[in-house]
Image 1 (cartoon, one colour):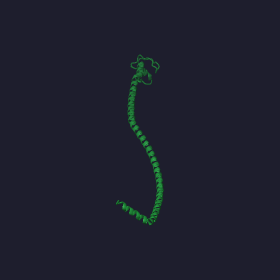
Image 2 (tube, helix red, strand yellow):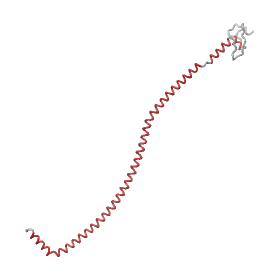
Image 3 (tube, one colour):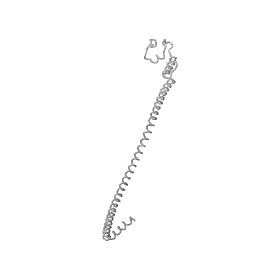
Image 4 (cartoon, one colour):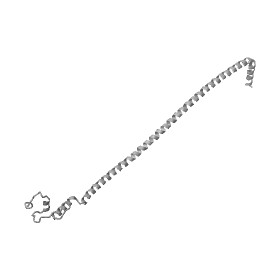
Length: 182
């Protein structure tokens, strides 16, 4: 009850002074409504600006994203080219020792073939009859008095004291002994 009495007095005071206050309350409410409308208008303008800024930011992000994608693609191409070059260098590094070994083996084979060729040439010269032996055979035939394919048969002089009458007769202008000149 104690709280009820002050409430009743407050209500009575409001009712008695309420006409004036009601008008003040209406003007205050109208001011509040006008302020709310002004704030709503400002908020809508701010929201429009925010939407425009957001759209512009999204466009910038889209442009940056496209640029980033194109740079990624370019980096990917460069990475692929670098990987291809790396593989080429690795292949060349593997190939160079193989080529060097092949060249060394080829040089050894060529050297051996040349040595065998020289040995074969030297051995073929040994097995062929040489021209000195043929000359010796012709000389023996001439000394023996037999006809040779190089000279017609010449009669041997039986009374000749020389050892090689056929050779001396071959050169008639050459007189080595006095009894052949007569």
